[in-house]
Length: 258
Image (cartoon, rainbow, N blue to C red):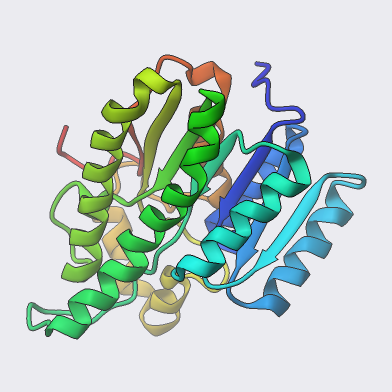
C-alpha cells in the first residue's frame, strides 16, 4: 500500500529510543523528512547516526531539548518550518510510565505526572497546530496507553494523565476537523524494548512478568516497537484520511473495554 508519505515533513517528538525511534525509522523508510527529538543530546546524536546509516541520504533533523518546556517546543517547530517550510505530521510520543504505586500522591507528584504525560504533548501540539491550520491540512497522532482506557496496575498519576490525553485528542479532533487537520491517538499495550520499563521489570522478576503476560495478554507476548510504529504510520498517512478522533489500541487483545 502506498502511504503517500514521500517528502512529507514529520516531527516525532520523543524519538531517541524505543517506540519513538521506531516511529521515526518507519517514516524514513517511507521517504518522509523526519525531525527527531530527545532530552539526552548524546543519545539523540547516536540515534541520528544510526538512522543515517540505515537510510543514506535521508532528510533527518535532530532537535535536542526538553519538550516539557514552552521554549524548546517553540524552537523545535520553528526549526522544522525553517528547514522544510511545512509540518505535515506531528507524532507526540512524550511520557513516562514511571511513578509511585498506591493512592497517596501529593500535589507535587500529581503535577509531575501530568506535566510529562499530558501537558508536554498538549504544549507541542499547540506550537505545531497554527502552521497546519494555516495550510488547512495536517495529521496529529498522540501516543497514549491502554492504561488510559481501563483499570491496570499502572501508577495512578500516569494512567489518569493518559486518560486525559485521550479525551483531549477526541475533543481537539472535533474542533479542528473542519479546518482540514486530523487528530488521532494510539494506545499501546505492553511493549518491550532496550532501556524500557518492561526490561527493568524482567531484570527484577522474570517469572512474575512472564506469568502476567500469559494471564493478561491473549496473544501471549509483548508487542514490538515496530508494531506500534505501523499503527502510527497508518494514522498519520493519507490512507487514514477519513479517520479523526479515533484511538487505535495495539495491545495483543489485553483491554476488555470498547
